[in-house]
Length: 392
Image 1 (cartoon, rainbow, N blue to C red):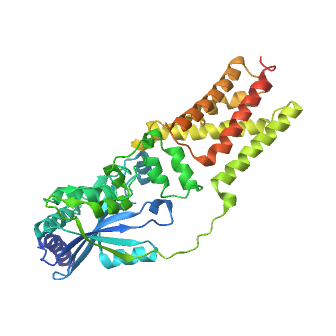
Image 2 (spheres, helix red, strand yellow):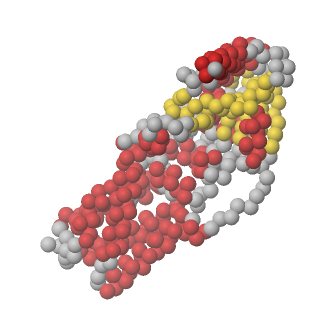
Image 3 (cartoon, rainbow, N blue to C red):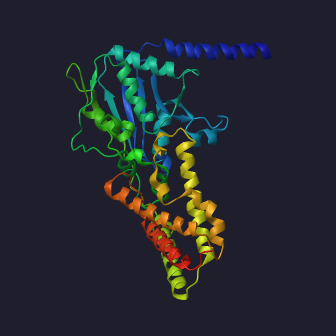
């Protein structure tokens, strides 16, 4: 009986997969793109995109999306941190997909595509082929290969008519950083974390098509796109579910700007007292050098020890200097060597370079960090003054 049951289950699985591959869509079928609005968490803040394949005659209503990851992947978090995590294509019944995002209170918009019967079949067959276990995985890249860019790629490969993506109304080119931050509240830890972790490579203007790494621009560009036969790519736009307005509580006392302002004011206040009393708060300096050093090591690891393309050329190292960790021994001492005073002058120069990079647009830094930058500059200048007569 066990052997028979195993053979039966295997046969059903084989037939199910073979059947999915052999389905011929009817003339009533529709291929559409679903655009999901932002959610409340950082992971959901940028929206989502998916294909919907609907055929009433064949009783098909499926959703395919390229935003699934497998938590059972060996060394999941290590691969995620290194930028080496594979994402998967997912397939869901439309009703389940719809209900899930309604429950999350996220807007759902649908664009029914103006495809020929042959093109619909090609898209469907392509998605089904992608869903095979051996084809499901792809190496995710936030800017260049994600759930949104895959939608465009699949359509271009399977649309024989040829697609021209026209500029949406009131379109204005932005840098990658601005495009990201437009999706976030500026005074949040997610926003600040992104500005610290991502380098100057994302401060260049994105091309028109590069804007389509975000689902909202997939929707905007698809709406204006035309086919080589002169027809519109999208024959019908419809709002399926509109997000309900809910009051979101925010606590300013734990916001980054408030926290760094308090930290900065504390540094300045202690520095003023130290200057007035001609002494130095050793604990404060240990905290400053340890904090900036650890952040600096983190930035260096993201830059050189991962495959994330967006973490390169990160000039946050101008304030979060990794070598500060190795200066803790000097900071602890009452007297220092001449070279350490020169090192402090070097840190002041680094902060000056940060200001220059910010002003000329080489890299944009988190505005919430500004109180910290000012406080660090004041503290370093004070330490130079303090140590000038205490060099051994």
